[in-house]
Image (cartoon, rainbow, N blue to C red; front, side, top):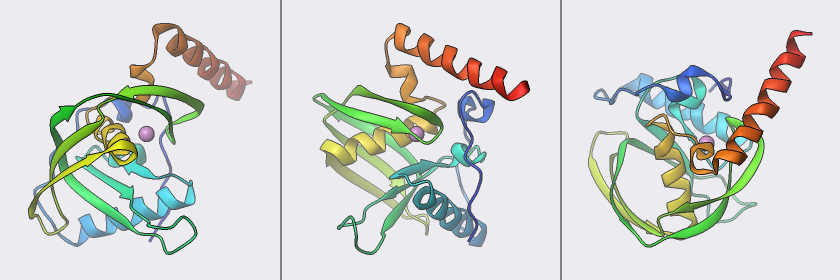
Length: 171
Ligand code: NI
């Protein structure tokens, strides 16, 4: 397993259209293991393939039962939200959007269709915090960042901050 480099805003790969996955081979399994390792090393609770520069419809999410216990994750291939219900407001951050957290309005309950690592079609209904994580990660494979859900003012302030960092790196 390898820890991959996490792409950060404004990397173009975070905005690209991703490709659907149609082969469930060893290379997919390796990619998933690398994503899980990268996520836990960061540390994070979810990671989408574009965040490590792979423009694919693939996410991994942490499903560990106990914070200090054994780490457990699941991979979702070609995930898509087919139903949304209600709203909730919860704090979000993103490994690709460093040093920013903010409340984001999301659906309270969602139905997701996806494939598992063998290519089997699955469906999941989930709500609350896990629904937030899934909406955040599925946004990534559609080129959307949590930043896009914030007010224009908050977004502009963050862009300004990043520009300053990038200018600083060039000095
Ligand atoms: Ni993210």
